[in-house]
Length: 253
Image (cartoon, rainbow, N blue to C red; front, side, top):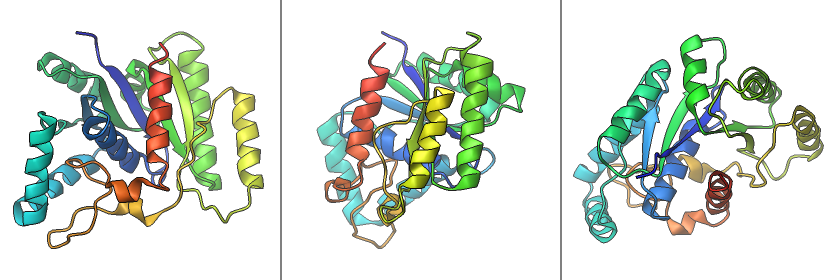
């Protein structure tokens, strides 16, 4: 069995959407694309994805519609929900080893990682990743922080060959289609000069990205660790295009 790829969504600043992107990508690939994935939640101390899994399980227990949907889904897929492990960032590699040693066939292990290079333990974890995707938004603080992170990873890890990283990519997230494009062009020029590629897929700023299961709700789901995003909500989200682009990148090796 081949070793699974280690893929991180990582940013220095909160609010760029790395946790949501981790869940959406993992769920889409596991439940729709047929890959086997796992998630290591390194978002210490809040462990947002672990909390989301617990909410998802509670909502299935208390909502008959979700309960039936879960039964039908897992019967059809003939596989379980993907595992979610919580881990401090500096111990994430050991968490991945536990998953790999557990006997479950895995194609990708996703990590929700803080993007800092000022903590040796986190730097060591970042260095073990195969691919890193860094969500960015047209916000000066977020953008400058993300470019600084990407630059430091490039200069101190990738360029020196002290890492397993095969690719570091920026990803436009929460983009308002009404905004002027000048700002985006400026940042893309800066990123290009730094040698950091930006994914072609652009994710819009949409409330659907925050739509979770509710105990008494019958609404279509988008963000869930137990279900894929609803088909009716996929259109216009660009999530399908994003996962296809990511798969194209990580399968090039």
